[in-house]
Image (spheres, rainbow, N blue to C red):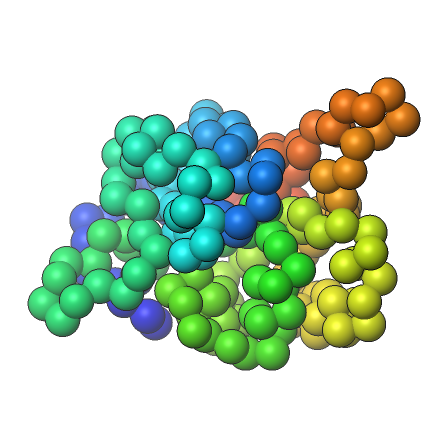
Length: 187
């Protein structure tokens, strides 16, 4: 596994990695973290490098999880900040991340972690946040099919586009936890 897993204190509860991508709704990731904790999960967050550029409050996320936010590989000899994952939630998942992951591209810590999940047999759930125009692209549709064939579970697509009244619909962060199904969330 990449540097994310392995050593580190063993959690008393199952450990959930939350992978955050650069989408405007990423600012609400605290909702998912809080809901996961209420359902008995320990949480560690890995963000894409672009998401680290102001898409959400990184200090607030670190305060919620009590763990460092990860976006880069650790240096040799640096302690592993998270134990191995019991499950992974990608929310919000962008067009770029879904396509690179399906292609096996591991050029960021977030993508390398996602690529490894298949070999580890770790349940992965995804809440896509992709515009309708991008979602129509054949490469994206092929990526969804490829990841689905690997056992990745997807929530309903979310375009982030304003609804009829002009307001943005709710992202429904908790759907990621619901998608984990019967996977045990308590010790």
